[in-house]
Amino acid sequence: MHDQALTGMLVLDLSQGISGAFCTKLLADFGAEVIKVEPLSGEPTRRLGPCLEDHPGPERSGTFLFLNTNKKSLTLDIACQTGASIFKKLVKQADIVVESSSPGVMTSLGLGYEDLEAIKPDIIVTSISYFGQTGPYRDYKGSDMIALALGGLMHVTGLPEREPLKTGGSQAEMQAGLNAAVATLTALYCRDVSGIGQHVDIAVVECITSIMEATTMMHNYTGQIRTRNGARHHVAYPSTILPCKDGYVHVHGAVHEWERLAAFVDEPRLLDEELQKAPRVHADEIDALILPWLMQHNKQEIFAMAQLWRLPFAIVCRVDELLDDPQFSSRDFFAEIHHPVTGPIFYPGAPFKMSETPWQAGRAPLLGEHTTETLGGRLGYAEDDLVRLGELGVV
Image (spheres, one colour):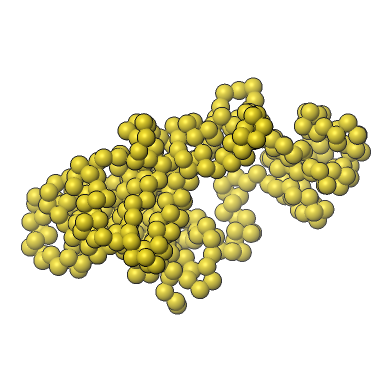
């Protein structure tokens, strides 16, 4: 087996919550040694549901277990002088530090970018916050929903006659984590070329606005403000979500596929010239013509038949259907990972594949599982030292 893509890289993960954890998860899953530096009581995500069998516990949070695969756990109170001193010793060996404290907090602890740069000039520090390290909002409190709202995505999500909606899950946080991983690796490449480290500043709200290109550019070019369209595509039609006999499917037959769609659903009235000229205007009428055929078939039949006709229909999959989907199965996307508390559970795998340096499955750490290994093995602390640090509440 080859080394993984990021083998040999040391990352210190001070982050709490989703964004930083997803960033460092991507690094850890591809071979980086990621040491998650946690408070003595554990990172708050350890108590975030859903929890195994609805019984909360530091080793039972599905969110934590997914976001921290392949990492090590070091419990360390960096708010005390001794803990901060120990952390600085680890920084001397590290390539990357990822943190998600409010702006100014790390500096107040003597662990800001300038402090760490003085210890290791080529260190890369990635700071993730809701509004970034500068600007009038930098000290405001944030959340996933706040980022979706202020970033503009909520304004275009939902039905036109109803209030704006948030997307499912923690999409702002995950998007920020993905951007943080890309930016961190870019900074690492730059360091390897130039020898210069740097401070990477990630604002969650900007990560959302950055994926709003169609909406912002539409306004910049035409002055139009895009509105909510529900499940309907804002330009092409028909392109929407409609019910069928046993669930929902995405229906698509716009522009060059129009005549094929009419033949596929056996509805010649779709060929009406007025419908083709202004499909968005006649969206309700078009849906009504397609719907009877859909309700006679289940989603698997519709999907299979549409692909034979080269129409890009899709099943709207439930989570249980994802686990059984033959495409995911054939590519071994879901991986069974064993954890000493939860036992074996299927996890989503890598978001991309690398032929020579592949992703590898590995479990999330138990709280403080690698404290002795890290401080003893890396920094040379003796067992008596570790006992004393424990008695003082440092580790």
